[in-house]
Image (cartoon, rainbow, N blue to C red; front, side, top):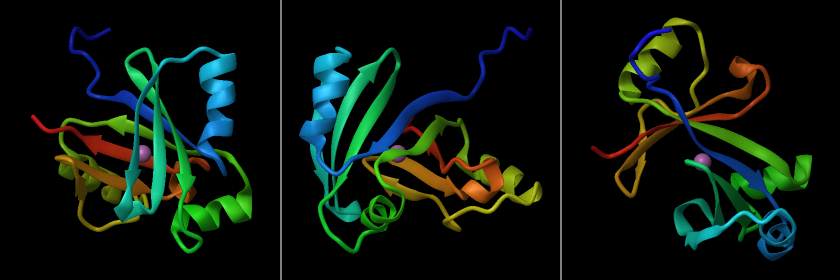
Length: 138
Ligand code: CO
């Protein structure tokens, strides 16, 4: 074992639901996870509720328009796990390494929201899980 801590940490797991309040009835009320922020992310056309699970979060994601990517996902696949998000130190380096290994990225350059830079990796490359990578602001 190396003394160097892994650069990778689970930031969040996102679960798509048709109704956040119904989702909270399980994750908050039955299971007992503390709820953090609830917010609307207009650029993704979703409402989100964050639940705290140790140092990571669960995000319940509810589409608020019919034509967003996540609404189409919900219509096609139903509610369930949508993606896993890992933090990386250097998102460009991670993207370059993934490309060199033939992985398919869903955006060519990192997107940005609230100072967080992020990219998605196609489930085809990961064994069936949509993967998001985060580079947090320093
Ligand atoms: Co995410």
